[in-house]
Amino acid sequence: MSDNVFDLLTALEQDFNAQAALVDSKDKLEEIRVRFLGKKSEINSVLKGLKDMEPEARKVMGARASAFRENVERFIKSRETELVNLDIAREIEAAGGFDITLPGDYGLKGSMHPITIVARELTQIFTSMGFNVVDGPELESEYYNFEALNVPADHPARDMQDTYWCDNGQLLRTQTSTCQIRAMEKFGAPLKIIAPGRCFRNESIDASHENTFFQFEGMVIDKDVSISNLIYCMKQLLSKFFQKDVEVRLRPGFFPFVEPGFELDLKCMICGGKGCPTCKQSGWIELLPCGMVHPNVLRAGGIDPEEYTGFAFGGGLTRLAMMRYGIRDIRVLNSGDIRVMEQFNKVIY
Ligand code: DAH
Image (tube, rainbow, N blue to C red; front, top):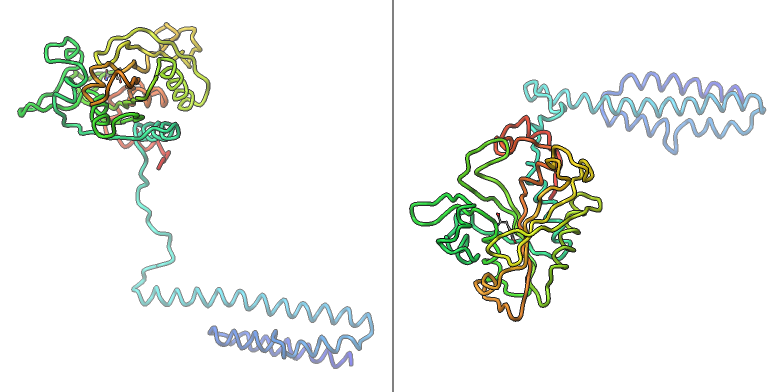
């Protein structure tokens, strides 16, 4: 019996070697698989014969039989890959030598502008605090940019914002505060909005001045809104943005559309308040002008100041982006210089 198994296996191995050499298609490969590994394959008779053998011989023949099986399996796998590659090679030849298996050309990968990154981060923070995001036109009327914000034609505050006027009397908005009035008109009270956007001022450009920059405006109107609500909201916003607890202080500030008006300063995070070049040795960074909405502004938005109060704030998006990324020259932001922009590979949807 043992001779029989031996002969059977040897014949099988020889047969397989002869057949394997002839495989040139998937069908032939499948034939080989059925014949040498399938249920009715001869290797199964070999395995059946093993049980009648002496233990020593059974061990030797058993090992040889399973080595044969493994050999057949390995062959099928590798020949399969070869055949696929052969098909591809034929396709390439048919396509005139174009290799469809080469990795594609992905082109240049885009990146987000630092202002877009910061705007989206702020938007996420504000929406998580229940604010709605609104928008307004960049080409504005004098009414929305000044008058409705309690800045009449002869008001000295107009001089603070050098304005680009158009021939038809319109202007390029100097502040996103325009969105306050538009939002009040559209949604009424109570109201919780932010408006990130681009603004323009007729400034001479240098490392810290631009004629085109970005702000974000915020407004909260409800019954019994107070200065402590304003401070709490600003602290929340800043600690979420900088991802650590921040210290802030309020100083009086003058803006015609708020009364009282404040400058909100942030304790310098670079020196921890000791004084450094970034905070001009003062320990504080002037960050967010804000205040309680002036009754005239509420009225202009169609809201009764006897019934509702509110606060508003306006921050420099450009300023925040520069602080966040340590950008010292504001001009690079509008330069479109790809070498600068491709350093910002963060994407926020
Ligand atoms: N719009 C002002 C500016 O561009 C900033 C500002 C100050 C906005 C006080 C506000 C505010 O909402 O309450 O200078």
